[in-house]
Amino acid sequence: YTNGVANVVCAVDCATGDTYTLDYAATVPVGNVSVIRGLRYFLHLQGTVGAGPGTNPIPVPAAAWLFGSGLLGLAGIARRRKTA
Image (cartoon, rainbow, N blue to C red):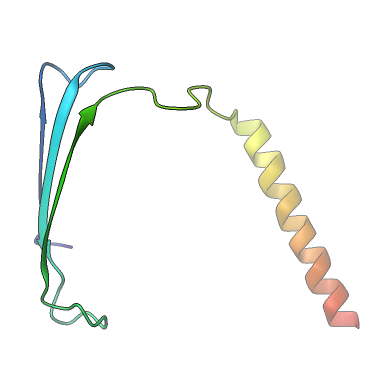
């Protein structure tokens, strides 16, 4: 939301192993179509900066092949349903 304010504080330099605190406050816009419009909320997170689980990222070519094959599968299903 446009009126949200975030504040991040790190103990040293936010490198791996450093501790951090993140505070975020905002209000859901009154013009929002949800039932919570006008609600003010606050988020507080604290922890340690780390590479996290699964530190080996998926290589882009492998991700592209996986995404492409998924799209082809969905196109095949849609085509099969269209002809039936």
